[in-house]
Amino acid sequence: MIYPPQEELRHRSALIIVDVQNDFCPGGNLAVPDGDAVVSKINNAITYFDIVVASQDWHPQDHCSFDTQGGKWPEHCIAGTSGANLHAVLDTARITHIVRKAYKKDQDAYSAFDGTGLAEMLRALGITEVFVCGLALDYCVKATALDARKAGFNTWYILNACRGVAKNTSEQAEREMQGVGIKPEFVRGPVS
Ligand code: VGL
Ligand code: ZN
Image (cartoon, rainbow, N blue to C red; front, side, top):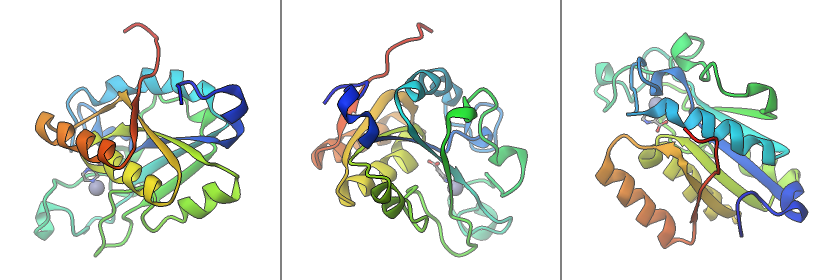
């Protein structure tokens, strides 16, 4: 398999853009280093897909993952706030489906498949090939790609359209994904 998807596979391929939200970008409450660098890459990749899913982390104010509630993360991506919005430069006109996850107080969800019906939706659309990109490589991108593979999709992660929270966990994430047959891909241009 190659990126971009071969023309005859285009109608069976989906791009999943994971959590490219303001809070995960520089200036946000849980900024991923260089997180906004994925946007221009994704805007390039997006042109090769007819089915484009964007996920949003979508937490209530008192979500269990927040340090104020004994969780591991600072408050982030609170439903309806600007921090939960998709990055303003992301080409949202080409997004065909949005899934919101981890919107229940007592449940966290790293994967865009978790509690969203995404696998069934993609199957109903005839999708067999899934390309994952976005934030963060070592958390939600990894979890999404692993779930895509588990659900039976041929799965790739577009490495240069991802950023991770930390180097060691990102390298570990790549090993985990590759260990179950998820392959790395790279989006071309624009030169930046
Ligand atoms: C994420 C930490 C907490 C992510 C979401 O999108 O990778 N990370 N919530
Ligand atoms: Zn979260």
